[in-house]
Length: 288
Image (tube, rainbow, N blue to C red):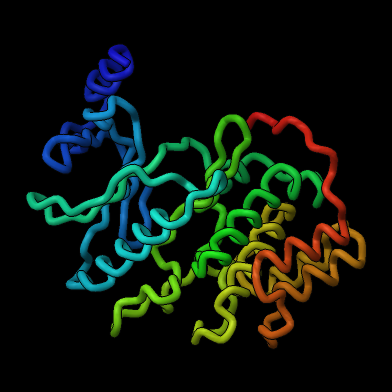
């Protein structure tokens, strides 16, 4: 551990000094450029108490939208505390820094994500995609849905991939948690297209939003072309080289005009896929 800490300290030679700071009573040392999100930034940080590197998500108030930041922090903290699953990122700590007036969440650090992977790679067909990452994502969503939590922001950057090929779903900041919503604060307008369905989330088809997001993510992962909107999703689904029965199943999942046509939740989608395409024999995961 000593050599790792030294490397982090000396990296200041290559970075601007202003990018290094402590948080939470000097427990976490932040260094380097963060991964930027809508209302939060994720830093690779050194936990000086546990002597390990972690991901520190720091929420930043924007133009007086403190209520939105606080609600997002509450939802993600509650979701990650409740959801203990091998395919959901693990939370270590959370709190509010009195000096910087920032909320933060400490989680396990994972270098790679699906967005970065797809910049130089594509999956060669449905089975490789589903075997390597798709099943793991759906199992995480099915588990979350069984605990009355809807992710609502499925997209490549929120799918982390370890070096051993394990998938970790992250960013529950706009999740909907049944019986845990702050009155008067809504995050329904936060959506990432084309992964979010077109309708406003009024509670009628909340779980199927993750079904839509998963299949949209699958289409993007299997397509060689850039997909920017819902029309592109429909067009490129029809181009996929998959069996007609599988294509019909996926077509239902991204129904644009009738959300009721979609599978009601991730567990139902997973069961339908398994009936249609039985799981391959268990194999050692590929190293990404």
